[in-house]
Length: 114
Length: 109
Image 1 (tube, chains in turn yellow, purple):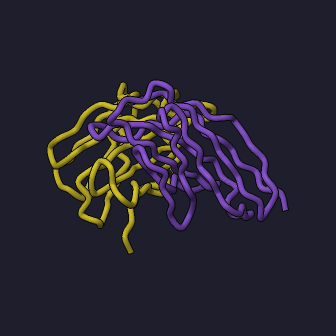
Image 2: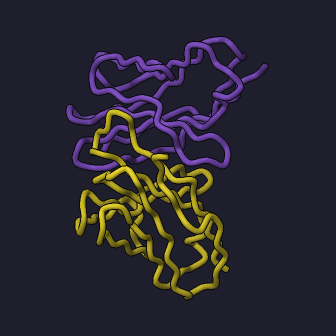
């Protein structure tokens, strides 16, 4: 089944403890992106990648890192998480920037930083 | 990318058409208009997109104003499963999606 898989689905961590949220897609998509969703703020893009080794900042990149060493994986790294990074995170992928079938989103990772 | 403005919420009766508006007055000529929806506890789901002409697919229709400063997502017969938050986005081919606050659609039986 074509999908975007995020892990973990839920994560509670403490301030300052490095963590990685993984994202993997099995559709050979070129484009991948990370979003965070907060009440009242909608979805905001964190980082995106147009190809292997090509990443760029979205609207809210502060406090996050990403890497794209292989086409299928696009992990989101929080080097020193803080409580304001408590949020619902989504990974998305697509074949092209304007895909005929749209972007495919993962099921989300709910992160709580205490 | 253009800023989008949508009503916070809308209500509809089941089996009736729903017109969800989106304002994107700062849209540029290369910006595509996208619509996604998000059901509770799920990731966003693609609905439809277009550039200048109206578009139809199995889920919905997209009506784009002649000046492209606004668009309307049309659900022809709302069902209870259409209750979701609907996001409109206007972005160019050089960037990925940006979403605003969305419209929460409530469907009454």
